[in-house]
Length: 118
Image (cartoon, rainbow, N blue to C red):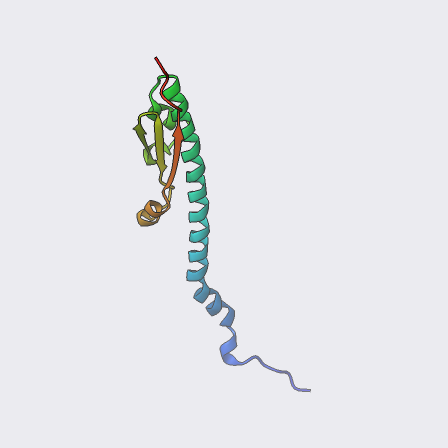
């Protein structure tokens, strides 16, 4: 009985297929990481906005309170805008591609309520 020999070109076929799929796998991994980083930035923006609104009620600095409410290192990606008693916080996700992190910037708004009557 004769033995079947593999064809000469099939020996490295699996390696070639894996190498061809690597750019797709890297792209999918980066997209997944970007979505997770954007979700984290959204959560951090919400916490920071609430902390800043509470600081307004307590007559403290809202920007300082917002930075204290987020993890260390997030403060430099955080922007606090105060308009009376309304606080807007923007947080850029920590991504290696600057164009993508600008697109996925999260924003949260908190209101400290109406002005107190004299």
